[in-house]
Length: 354
Image (cartoon, rainbow, N blue to C red; front, side, top):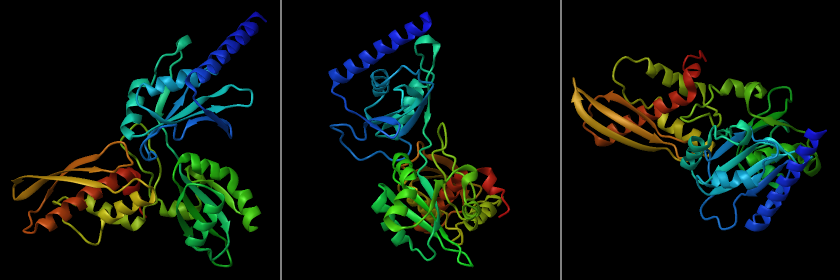
């Protein structure tokens, strides 16, 4: 009984401290769907909304710890665009939260500075990059629905839709399905909660909705998705749909023991750009440098920066010298893009027999 009373006193003290902090700082928190949110953006925020790779996942938070302790701690690293603490109906936090910064480098700095940060009672925070799932699979759609029509329907009932890929209905009148990409994990998770009822109410359509992840993928997505993206950084931040044809070409070229030749049949540059466009990662930026010839070959070092990912992809290769500067540039970009796609797909996709 004494232990329970002490716990209740401590809880009351923490709540008073939390309320005093809110009054002193004039910070506004919004309670929505089992989470309490700060910002998104906060008052006075300057700049665009953050892209992928800017959010960190925080867990092992003591149940009586609130934003008055957590927000100032994570603001030490850099200004916060958004902070979301997961809450239950009793008013306790659920032990985890999400902090979003304006830049990927700020999220990386938060992980370096605050992962395993000690708290009272010997507890240590766990901080890692958020996976930020943004893709939903829709099933049981009407046969013949177009991507444009579905996009317009989705924008009526949910926010943050950035792209749609429709899988046409199969034989015997089977329903169509689609992959929907959202601008953030938050908008996708909100859509997941409302789409079934919204489509039923607004359009009289009964659909199914689930995350694109793990074993929940529909069969046609399993066939098209050669492998999950693996990015430099603490954890992956998403998945991509990459065609088997593209990786057949990349796989064949990766076993070539000779210096690499530019091949229009395997447009790795175009493939990488399409993947980045689909998932909102931004346009890849290439930095290529040439070095002295070695045994008739030209040494090339490259760095490919994908704006939505935490770190650039770097590497080196040997190429044949070409009389045309543009051809040399194309070949170097092709080699770099091919290696980035190879790294993103992991060995499992490069050894897959499809």
